Amino acid sequence: MTDVTSCNFERLAPEIEAAIENAAFVAIDTEFTGLVYGPDATPSLFDSIEDRYAKLRQTVASFYVCQLGLCTFTHVPEENLYKARAYNVYLCPRSFGNVDPQFCVQASSIEFLCQSGFDFNKCFYEGVPYADRVCQRAADLYIMNERYFEKPGLTKIYDGVRHWLNNNDRSKSPDGEDSLTVTLPEGLSAVVVMADLKTRFPGVQVEVSRGGLRLTLPEDFEPQRVAAEGRPPTESELRCAMVGFSRCFEVLAASGKPVVGHNMLLDLLLLYHQFCEPLPKSYAKLKAGLSTVFPAVYDTKHMSLQLRQQGVSWLKELMSGADLFSLFKALSNAVVPYAPRVEGAPKDLRAHEAGCDAYAAGFVFLKLAHIVAQKLPMPPRALSWRNHRDAVRPYANRVNLIRAQYHHLSLGPTDKAAETRPPWLCIRLPAQAQAQVRAVLSRCGVVDMRCLSRNCLLVAVGNYGCARDIVEAFQDDPSVRVVKYKSYRHNGVARAWLWAATVGTIALTATCALKLASGKVPVL
Image (cartoon, helix red, strand yellow):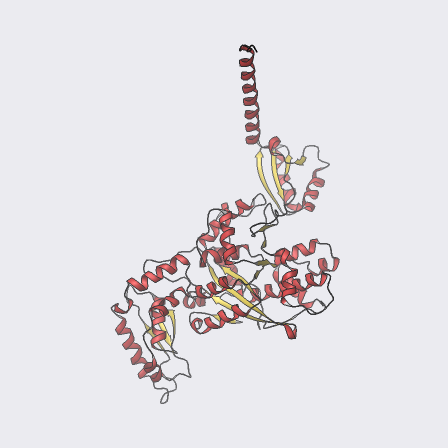
């Protein structure tokens, strides 16, 4: 696995783009600075798809992807092999001109990243810049209008760097000055100056540091040659530096390659917001926009849950864990005839590092695709990528939805409705017993509760087993009654509207009848 930072991104960008172009599919994962934007955005089993999207839209607009894992899988058919290339990309927004991105951080998410070994210094000091489409247009205007090369203070920086290089004679002193810190003049964008210095002094590594920009020279570079071989950057090169990883993302979007992830709804929304445009208010418009960027997505969480529900006993036992690395370990140890080999695993494979998670998601996808394909009426043999892709088409564009009315949502333009969870329950109980009843409900499984009145609770459950446990828990208690919720019976607002409509209909009917009775009957 390769860590991608601002220090090596320009060198690695062509390699990443070529890997995407040649891949059968691409797996992704993200780490971000927050998970839920406030109590109003907390997931609930009462959420419809539109409700959940509205909540996610708040969250996505507030946080940002600080690490993107991207792993390409290229098929080698004659060897029944897939070669994986994993990249761990550190991202950090950069300011220029009037563009000054803002984002929030959530304490629990930062604590989680710390516990997972996330390198915040590498993120903020060496993170690769990026830009959505609005910021890309702003970058074009900045390059066109700001006349960067005429900015005061640049000549002084160039002279200082040349002096450092020309006086850093490693042939006489192997321990010569290996770093230089330059102070940025006010009003200059760090990302633009970094790109400028890297082009004028090829081989010099530049990163943001305390006091400005820190320049270092690798051991195998001769300082005097570096000082003499550079050239001024073109405007196109400066723009490329400003939009950063967005260039690779555009290659991924244009390739149309299937994109794989695990429990990936928030990943997709964050990437669309961060690299394309702000999420639209309408869920229908979101689906249309996502389909142009990610025409085919596969969620291994949804695939594994669906395969478990199909009732094959060995699959149920094999995939008893639903989290990504439980699936990865189970499928790594499973013996599946003619399953393809995968090369290129990260040496230190650990959870919650985006590049590792992306590799694990791609590996799980391949194994599940092979299992599904082997169930089809075809002779057992090594299978092509086309066989694997065709076998999993029923799972395309279906993304797992946690803690909502539906198990998953469909991102396809035309598709059958997603499977719903069990119907809501209405529990009538004495007002003084609410605390005890709530305690019993929480022990039955995943539940969400709303108070309809002092004597009535509305309960949404995660599965039918939980619903049965609730019914059984209160079946011998005469003071508590559990029934299926019906809005016209249990919802006060719905009842009021229903009564109003009924009274209005009766009044209108009576008025019409009186007018007919008092009118004259025409003579024929």
